[in-house]
Image 1 (cartoon, rainbow, N blue to C red):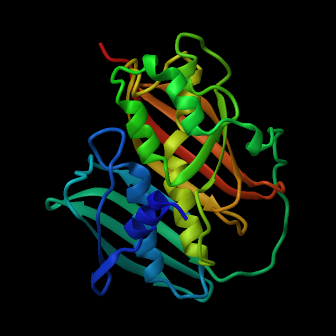
Image 2: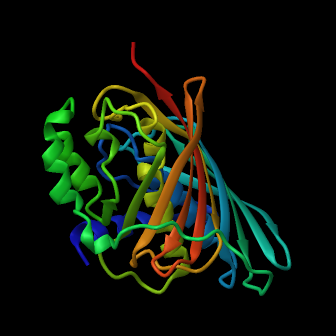
Length: 290
């Protein structure tokens, strides 16, 4: 396991300071605010720590309310909404400096048998045939407003091996194309056999690239290129089938709409053998600076 993954796992191992109250810290990000995927993953950890051990996360719905301060701890308060015979519901509020910055509702279910069908996995190349971030990002250093963003991106993503199937938005700025993006990802090391940990790692990664497809439709290079200003507004995930976040997962993303200064991304995450593991939807602020 590499050091970056160790540090990420430490971030997800929240400190319990009271019943239903947890505290987490932050790691460096590309921009001077807390990475949204980190807050979502930590909030899901807090919710999962209060759910019965035999119930696994099957969905989350969340809102990003304020920018997080990476220099201050985040306090997560869990409200135990309901424990039914099959389902458990939790509500989590993340607070910094006395104000809520994030709100999450999560549901957990006792495993059971039922009807089965799924959307077919789209075609995608073998992830091992694609360039790593360390191989690809330096090629485009001249595209970014701040040349140091390459090092910050590599540092922020060092815990995860994330590989683009096609060129990312910053590589094709100025050329619009189909609003669809695919990446393969997996944790950069072996993880423990803890289903909550794998779900939380996938939640962390899911906020990294989901709005790429919005940018592609308009030939925009992205936040680090300086041709758009953006932030996540809300985020929802449904966990359909078991998966491991330390094995390759295909993140197939597309954008059906952008309007009113907002863009919508929706995605499906598949295991390498074609199982539909997760569905994701996110809306974000996407503004062209004046």
